[in-house]
Image (cartoon, rainbow, N blue to C red; front, side, top):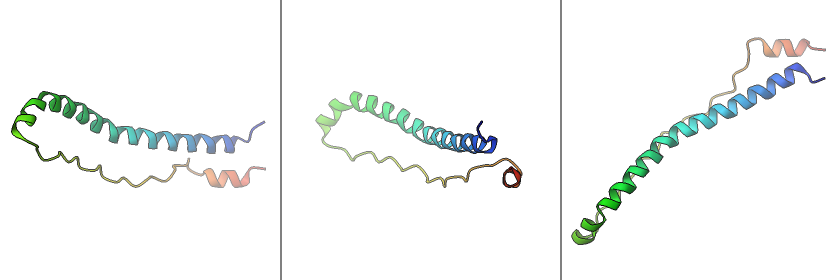
Length: 85
């Protein structure tokens, strides 16, 4: 039989990993959406660019750095785990 607190710890670690993945997807999704729009705009403006000469490259600002959150544990988890036989 598995230790209940070990299973709980594994599930908390999995939850933390999934939260990080969701946050990463939230940061990347708008960038991918903008990239699609820029590609379609560039395809439409390819002829005028060739006629009028080169243009300045488009610079995309880097997303802000978000510090990673500490794993969240259930209240009293450590105290209960220490008393477990």
